[in-house]
Length: 67
Image (cartoon, rainbow, N blue to C red; front, side, top):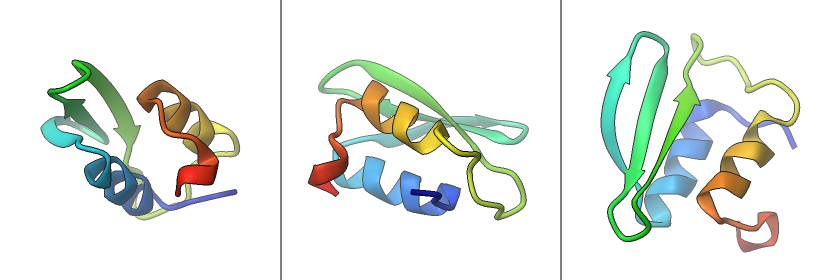
């Protein structure tokens, strides 16, 4: 399930995450309800490497079936 970073950011926003900061090629997304901060790699509109998107969603507490 390869995704572009913008798709992951959109999913995170739909689940209450907001942009906290961006440092270089990594965007930090923060959920004020769960107090979780996640880095999302943003590399020139390339798709995320295999497995990265599922790890981000798992850390966010989002099931793949929920998207």
